[in-house]
Length: 412
Image 1 (tube, rainbow, N blue to C red):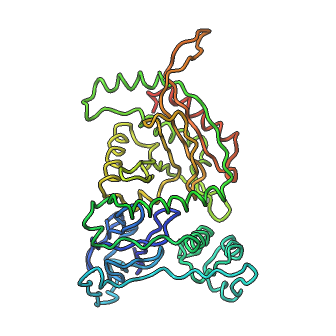
Image 2: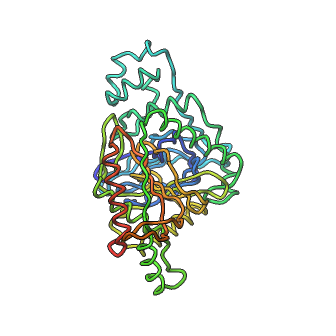
Image 3: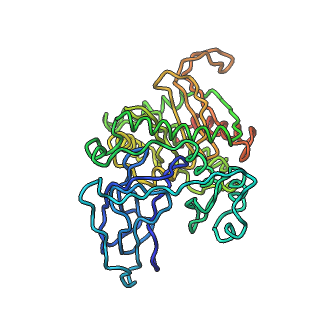
């Protein structure tokens, strides 16, 4: 990190507008490496570990614990290793949560579409043409919106999130003392459950409103995969056994290599494919609600490693310790309701992703093979696709690739 840079409040999903700083894990003068945990932030999804995205030295803290901070706001400054210290003054920590500095989100001014902000004001902003048009349509003043794009640029998603936040503002966050008294992960309180439900509702309403969904389904014979899995687990201890769900995740990731446009984001009215395949795994919370953190680089990891990482991820979702990259990196989401007895799930795409894969429960069904009808264990796999990014033909290619991979599990 050759120059001074700001460490910003990250956007941990399309439904996030602000977070509450709980604590700092670094202090001024500490060395910082990419991936280090810098701070803990309380969001609707729990208390999340926020990572550094570059190397350097922590120069100064700009926000103290207890502050509610909009997405994109600088939290600290990081300087290069050979750079002079910018400031020797560090804000004193508050004596109590009530005494903490409160940073409130900038107000979103809504006006009639005909009274859009003046052109000279917009010209000074880093804002994409698509975002500028969307601001006029929704009556949002872009000068009041914090940008999450590169270099702080305001994106179409920022404008829409600001409009949603103004239309249905979330209730105030719980006090830090209450958060500290609960579990570090997802305190099971009615207030947090309500906040999460509202956040999910805002994101799903936006998805249904803006994304032209199409749905496909296919039934896959799982006997080859289950037989192979049984043989593999005979050689493993109980704690090291693989679950069939990890086969579904690996097969999904490898199938995405054949249809890479499903592993992508829709941003600024265009498809942006992602080179890495990070699967968001939908995990239910004991207190209610849903979260879909990412398993990283699923296509490149062996099954035992994926199994260990999946177990660890589920445990940290329910007890605490999720990292910010796990909430922001998912390139496509996979959900399964088989344990609840559901035979098929048709999901809603989580923006800015362009697809969601669903799996139901394994059931025994009559199956025709070699001119004979026999009983086979099958699963229904579904795909929800964004018609702006792909079509039914490409979605069908993906499901066919998924089925083929599950017929040859030794290649996973």
